[in-house]
Image (tube, rainbow, N blue to C red; front, top):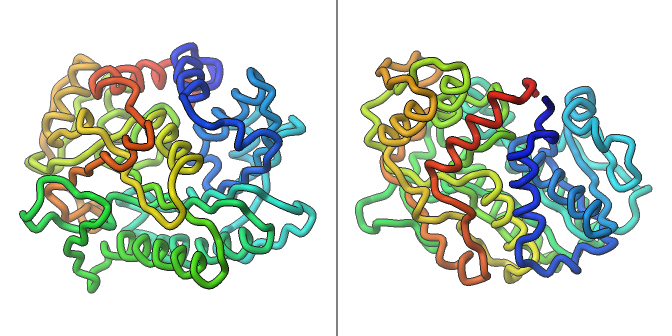
Length: 355
């Protein structure tokens, strides 16, 4: 069964598509997004096309990605639709798409977002968050976009210095910039600063949703984040492998909630502001997360030291909980509790063809 045909997945799409938002802002508009085949981007594409179908929104979705074959497989259900267009594009190269005319919303969702990619492609990681962001910002200015959204990360907060329990949007933690692993958070910070520069110098309307560690059935099978590896083991009925003591205390967000939060910030957020997309119901220690996922699969948790490549890509933060009050003030709420969403993810992936 393809993911889009899964009943549980369809329920998620409907829930987000019916979320209380000023959807009329997207009626007849053109939305361009990078990272279209990624975990967040692919779910967002599905939501917009679902709403087009059910509510006749007439929103044109311009999906950017590097791999046309992968996109055709993922979006086979809509690839020939008039309101969907896939554009093969390496965003680290300038975008030259003069035929598009005005594009109303531009969302930069593409990024390396897992440890092995940080360790094996540090240059690509940095450039996507800086050069890729610049290229999309230039595109947004050229095509007179009403709003630009830069998907940032909880990692921009660095390490918790012990002075707060949760990170709000004004917190600036510690990052040792003279390390390989710093490439991702430092380039995300630079990407945010670049957005503010374009806002000031070019008059571009900008919002910055900051995502937590996300999971869900649209996750890539190649994802090496801890939670993704736990889920993939559970889908295969294997023991969950924990490569540390598991005392790291993080915020996690289900992909449907991440996308509803992203849309909330896009459609209701204030120009120049950053917003944490997080709910305290998703805060959990890594060892407890592993136990929850093992329980879903009927397996157990085992401990194993990481290899050198894996260790190089691991976050050094031991506590990274986000304060989501600012986004909640816009009317955003999470859909369900963490155990429910973990079980749903495992159940969906067990009955889905590998993407």
